[in-house]
Length: 307
Image (cartoon, rainbow, N blue to C red; front, side, top):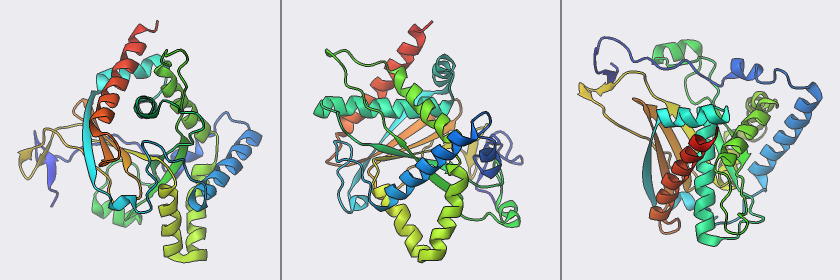
């Protein structure tokens, strides 16, 4: 029995947008890109992915303590609510996607926080991991459908993207929309690479060579060596009810991974909930929450000012 039902009619199932970044979608990502460029990007991306899981670490910064067992440290969670209407307004101005806007917002918030805390951002290597769904069955599926299709269990990969930093000159802040453009550029580059197609076969090969523990260690090291994780979920079109009780709002967080700056995003009833999991007593909770709100206000204002 499903616990979650539609609030207006419990006999009808919840409906979700039919989106996925599984193998079928990934094959179409390289349209219009030269084969040589795609091969070059793929070799480079695979090399970076392997390096991240072995030895290449982000620098220690005011958002990354680099503690050996940071996943055991206490956390604080801040939740920011954004209107989808505002997100779409920014999206139309930069000719990007909702994901581009959210990722750019996160990049800009990190930039504002770091500049307020340490000023000098030069030479800081920072990386974000974006989690992508790789299941071949698209959209929302019940357990019976998943078992029949043989896709029960996790089916996701993480893609690494550099977090941009800009040095404001003469105390003049940089263009907030530039962070969204950088996020858009990063995603465009990934579409011009075959990294998505290669990731799952490489993971299976690593599992055959080093076993399940070896694969788990590689994934653990990749997260430990990077600064932040960004993951999002698209919520249902209709209002939900849990055991007959209407759900007005909700969010989710990710725990147990060796990172302590994690962004989880979910859409529901015309708004986006961005939950930020931070390392307690290391990241300034109030300041980072302020920077998240300030970042979006500046992005929205910049988008409205652009003709």
